[in-house]
Image (cartoon, rainbow, N blue to C red):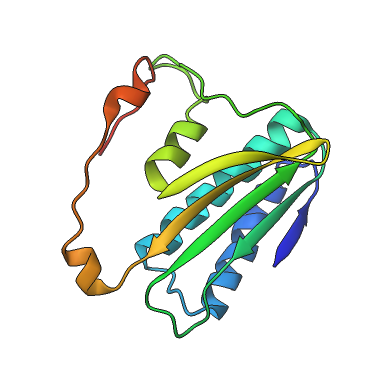
Length: 153
């Protein structure tokens, strides 16, 4: 399923509402961590497309069926810019520039690919069963973030 995004910052809120409604239909509860993370990722990627290109974009969601307890949710935002996404190094006072570091921290996988004359930035989140979540171990490799300002809370 997909949604057309106009080059208007107000589209970010509309994209979040659209994604929430699709999650509800797929059986993913609004209080699930996956849902909260996905909505934040929608905000980041749609904001990047709107702010950095000033052109229309397309938001795509691939969701599991309602019965699936373990599955992968895929989010893609395709825009008309052929410029590769580049994580930025920002200081602690900057009000922006942390979006890709946030995507990297929240998504299980992410990347980008050329799409026509533009690109598609995608990320995936794994929906785990409660038993799998109970045994999950989180390891953060900070070497990829040298020089980036971020705070884990």
